[in-house]
Image 1: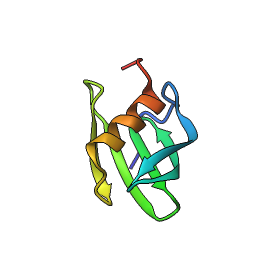
Image 2 (image 1 turned 30 degrees about the horizontal axis):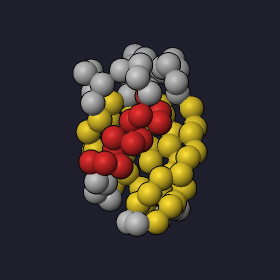
Image 3 (image 1 turned 180 degrees about the vertical axis):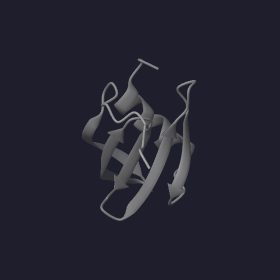
Image 4 (image 1 turned 45 degrees about the horizontal axis):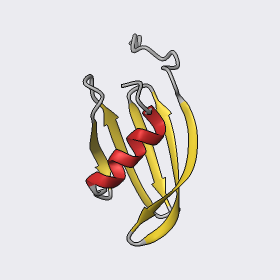
Length: 83
């Protein structure tokens, strides 16, 4: 079977690292963007996956539940104002 899914890099694909406040602590957040998915690792022990929707919003699809404020911060850091 041939997979015809688009594998070309999307805009802003890559690895990102920044600090954010989570559970009243400043922690390191690492995000890898691939196409319409964000793979999130916070403080080397919290993992989640976010899907970038067509309207630019993010939906968590897997992992530890993240507060809406953290998801919004990640969106601003990775996607900026482009979506």
